[in-house]
Structure formats: structure tokens, C-alpha cells
Length: 407
Image 1: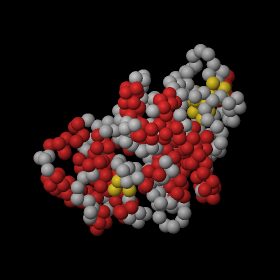
Image 2: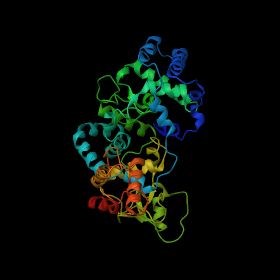
Image 3: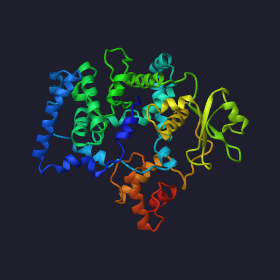
Image 4: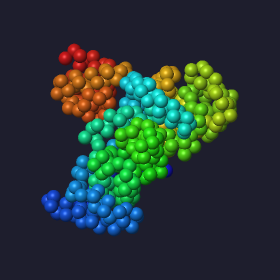
């Protein structure tokens, strides 16, 4: 079972019907709160039948009297679009994520040595997952992102029919985590959809894979970096990670059409496919599948077994590829030979922060200067482009930054 693929489906776009229960209620918080409290009281029997102590249940809900409106808003506004390849990767694989990953590799080397020896999973893959999931733990410090897991899942279980089955299952699992004593209710925090800790495990996946690596008797993925990274390693190992092997290779393609399907690296080489860096493939008998996520004009890859294992974490090709590419850069192997088909001049991470800051100074942007170009940054860029007569594309380009520097 994947950590976040179910949560990813959970986070799919919601129709108006998803909030029908709330919409059918008469106006006024007193009625809504009473309805929620009644649901909490009735769900107690289900939790107890599933092995949760009644006393534990009561303690977990002691200070939870109403739904979390932020959770429902997050559920309602999940994006329906698919970002272009360059957009997805630029926000995840960049100079800062690499530099911090290398810093963390040095800082946690003794523990990474032990985790790698125990589970056989490449440390750089674990560091890349940590970056992808929580920005090396930085999101755990943000009150605008972190929510009370019990309240979040109860909110979805009560007020979101589309997600209620998933949320109720996860709620019982979260209560059992409290019951085991790995964390107390005041520190059981997670994303709006219940993904928890440095490596963002949903409760059922936590139950399946959590590891007490530091030996203190608790499987604490919220506060213990060794526990969090070992838990990620345990998931990958149990899903078939092949120790000592990579995730895949960037390749160059010959002219003409290539057959689909899985072939050995030796067979792909015979068809004219070669490593982009000019080096030989390490194990010619490994089976591989060709992927061209940005079309023929962008980078191409041969993906081997470990690529599909990474997808046990999040069942999306872009996610697994971002983990692999970031891991390679953290390890010092360098970036892509063939870049993405980006229709503008790329900015560094610091330049993207500068772009956001300058847009803010001119009244176009009111978000964080985090270097991540999301909907708010794109809207600000579009507004600036419209005001100055530039082509309105919303791209975080050097061209836009130069205009801003002149203002």
C-alpha cells in the first residue's frame, strides 16, 4: 500500500456535491457544530469496535468541538490541471533543494550509514523524498499547513461524502497510533488530508511501515529524523527496492520510432539508445522502460525496477522522476544533459525568491518568498505583464525579472 497515492486520490478535485451535507444544513455554526458533535459521539462505537479504547477516544476528541473549515477549503480547491514538466520539476529540483540535501547528508551521515546498512536503500533517495515531502521538515513548522490530524480526518469523515470512507479508515488508524503511545494528541499533526511527519505518511501506511530507528521506544516520524528516514526506507525495501542499483538513466534516442514495452538495457542499447552522459549502462540485463515526459524534444529516460518502487510512495511518474533526479544531484552526479522544453530563460532559486519579493514590492503578490512558483506567483506575474504590456504567459522568467529590476 502506498503512502500517498491514496491520499493523492483523496486530494483530487471535488464537486459541489462533496460538501452537500454541509450545504443542506441550516445556516449558523451552532447547528453545524451540534451535527459534528453528534457524528463524533456516534463514531465512537465504530472506533471501539475496531479496537480503540473508549477513554482514548474521549481524550482525543476532548477539545475538538467543530469541523476544521480550512480542511474543507483545501479539499475543495485542489488543482485539476496538469502542470507542464518544467513547472513541476523547477519547483522541486533546484539549487537550494540540492544544497540543503547535501548539508543534511553531512549532518545525518552516521544515521544514514545505519539506515542504508539495515534497509539497503540509497541515502540520497531518502534525502530526496524528505525534500519532496516536507522540504526537509520545514513545512512542519508552518501553522498554515499543519493541522490536527484527528480533527482533519473527522472533518472529512463527517462533512465530505466523497472522502468519508477513506477518512474514517485513517481516523481509526490515527487513534490507534495515539493508543500505542508513539505520539500524544497535542503533537499528532499532519497535512489537511492526514499525511504526517517529515516523510508524510498517512496513518495506515504509518502503521504498516513505521520504524523506531533511534531506539527510544517510539516510532516518531514527527520529531526523530532517524525514525522518519528509516520509515521511508522500510516502505521502499518492503516494496521491492533493489539495493545497489539506481532508479534509471537519462538517455539519448536515435532517429525514428522505437518500440514500446520493457526491454533489457542491452536490447535498448542495440536499438541505438545510449546514456546521455556517454557512460555505459551498469547492468545490461536489467529490464527498463522508456519514458519521455516532455516529448521527444525533452530529456528521455530508461526506468528500471527501483523507479516503480519509488512510485509505491506516490503513484506518479513525475514524482518518482523528481525523486530520482534530485537524489542524483544530491549525490553529486550532476543534472540533466538535455533540459526541459522551457519556453523562457530559467531563474535560479534565489532569483525566483527575488522575483516574488519584487512583485510584492510593486503590489502584485502577497505570498511567501519561498521560490516556489504556484498559482499566487503566476497570477502576480500575469498581472504585472498585463500592466506593462508584456506577453501574458505567467512564466517566472529572467525577462520578467529584468523588467521588475528596472521599476
